[in-house]
Structure formats: structure tokens, C-alpha cells
Length: 333
Image (cartoon, rainbow, N blue to C red; front, side, top):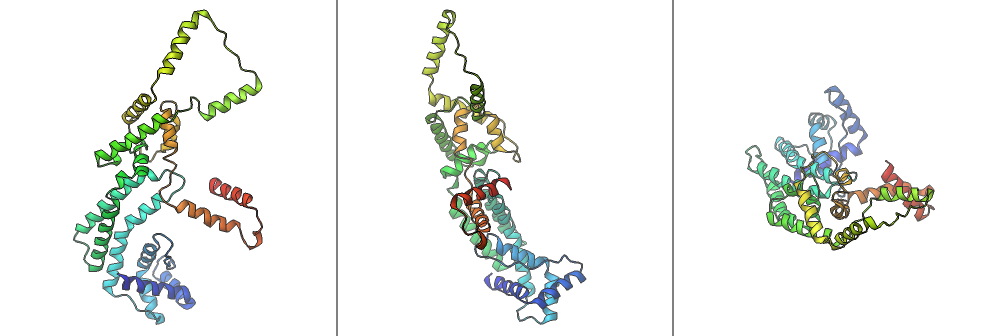
């Protein structure tokens, strides 16, 4: 596999370094009625970059073969078998690219998808491993390596506390994200315990702000005591004091699980916002789970954006100003 990838890298580097080769490639693509696609280089620190390089190279196959033959480039051309390897590798790696793009988002919930996506990757790769259309030994070896690596890393994923709890608290997945009954039971037990420990606020932030604004305009009206209502008030106060937080948490979890599943394309955070008054304890637990991102890509994007803010001509910006600009850049774009 590595010799084939090295050949592709050498050809891509040639087109990036040679103006004559790059212009001839564009001319050949135009003559063949192909889109003018510049070969992409891979980057060790960028996910999927090797896949993108191979895919772009394959898309311009005919133009690249013709150009390398015309300009007599000092690179070894790929054989027919190596082109077949590139094509099969792209088919194998495409699901991995789709998953990494999916879990690298920052404007939607990602951690709750990890269990389902990883199991889907395992299933797709295992199915393709059994298919007869994979003929090259290098690709078969690659698939064997991928399958064994995923089996080793993913077999206990459902018992990961963060991933299991986020999946269970996502109204799109709940129990369907799990294949192990014990894993979902343990996740629900942890969620129930956390909900029983937390004391939910009786008011949402919006209600508190509204009442605060009203209080600024007029003083609060203290209800007058009445002997007629005294007995009821005492009973109501006693019932509230006798409520068991653990029992409330159990009831919320049961009721939540009985809710119909949300559509996969819907936003789980909006669903929880609408249900906050029904599941106050679970909502508080959810806020500490569904905010977790699946990868470090969002934080790496912040570093990249910060590098665009601090330049040679803007190297004396204060740290507080940088934080404000980075925050606005990340949340207003």
C-alpha cells in the first residue's frame, strides 16, 4: 500500500512544483472536457488528507496519465494494478471520511452519535471485507488492519460513561444506540443518580429574567394570609417537603424513555428546551452531557482562527481582546 501512495505523492508534488506540468494538466483537462482540478497534497496533521489526495488523483486519472507522458515528468507512472488499488482504497475509506466529517462539527451535538457511527463503520467495513469485488492484496490487508483495529478500540465503547450517557440522553437515539442491555442499564442508572443528586431550578432563566424585569418596575405583591387557605397551604408545604429526589428522578427517566423518538435530522437541544419544565432534573443533567464535543477539531479551529487574528501587524492585541474577538468569530460566523 505504501509504495502506491508514495507514487501518488511524488506525482502530486511534481504538479505543485512544476509550473509547466500544472499548466499542461489544466490544458489536458480542458481538452478532455474534465473539470480543472488541481491535485491535492496530503498533510500528516489533517484528517482524511490522504483520502482526499487519492480521490482527487483518481478523478483526474486520464488527464494525469496523458500529462505525465507528454511532459516526460521525472516521476514513476502508476501501473494499471496500482490504479485499481487507488480506486478500491477510495471506496474503503469513503465511509471513514463521512464519519470524521460528521463528528468534527461544532454547531450540533456530536458525542451522542459516536456509538452508532462507530458501529456503523465496523459493519460496513466487515461487509466489504466479505465482498468478492475487492481483489488486490494490498486493499485486503488494509481492510483486515482496519477491522482488527476497530474491534480492539470499539468493543467497550458502550461502557464509556461519557459516550453512553450522551447517547441515552439524546432523544433521537435513547436505547436504540445500544446493542448491550447491560450497558444501557448502567448508563440509565448513572443518569438517574445524577438527576437525583441535582436540585433543579423551579424557574427557567427566561422566567427569572422576566420576573427580574417586572420586579424592577414594580414591587412584588405579597399575598395576604387567609385562615380559609391555611390548611391547604400547610398540606401543600408538607407534600413538597416530603418529596423524594430519587423517586422524582426515576419517574423522569421512565417518562423520558416512553417519549417517541425524535427524528434523526431534528435538533435534540431544541427538544430539551421545550421539555425543560417536564424534565427539570434530566434537563440539568443533559446540559453537562450533550455539550461535549466528540473530537478536538473545534478547539483546533479556534487556534487556527486565533492565528488569523494575531498577525505581524496586530501583535500587540491584549489577551482579553483576543478572547473577545475569537469568541465573536466562533459564534457569529
